[in-house]
Amino acid sequence: MNQLSFIQKLKNKIKVSGKNNKILVEHQIKISKTKIVIKGDNNTLHVKEGAKINGSFLEIVGDNCTIIIGKNSIIGEGCYLSAKEKNITLTIGNDCMLSRNAKLMTSDGHPIFQDGKIINSAKDITLGTKVWIADDVVILKGVEIGSNSVVGISSVLTKSIPKNSIAVGNPAKIVKEDISWAH
Image (tube, rainbow, N blue to C red; front, side, top):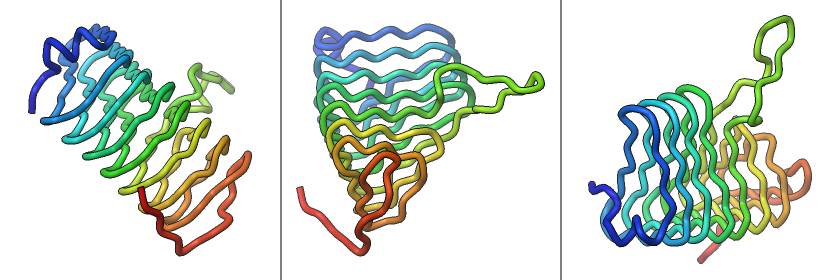
C-alpha cells in the first residue's frame, strides 16, 4: 500500500490534522477533484485497488474512525462520505457503484442530549459487495446494505436491507427481492 502520489495530491484538496492519521491507497486507483478532510487521532482512509473517486467529499472527524472504499468501487460526482465521532467505520464493499450526490453519514452531525446523555450516537454504515446507490440517495447511520442490492433514486435509507433487494422511497422500503444487476 502507498500514500497518495504527488500528482494525486495536486488534483485533490487534502487536509489532515491530528496524530497517527493515515491515507492508504492501493495500486491503480483514480481520484480527482475530491476533497479529503481528516481531523482527530488514529483515523484511516483506505482506498482499495481499482477504486475511482471523482469530485466527492470524504470526511473523517473524531478518533479511531475509518472509511474503506472497496476494490473497483466507483464514487460519483458530488458524493459525501462522512465517518464521525469515535470508533466508527463506513465501509463500501468491492464493486460498488455510488451515482451522483449520494450521501452516507454515520452521524447526525451534532449531539442531542436528554437528561445529560447523548441520545443520537454515531453508528457504522456497511455496504456489501456490488451495491448500486442511485443519484441523490441518503444513507443514514446504522444502515447495512446486503450484497447485490440497489437503492433507487432520491431514496432515504434509515433501516438496513438484505442482499439481492431493491429499496426505494423516503423512507426507503424494499420493493423487490431476489434480484441481481449488471454494470
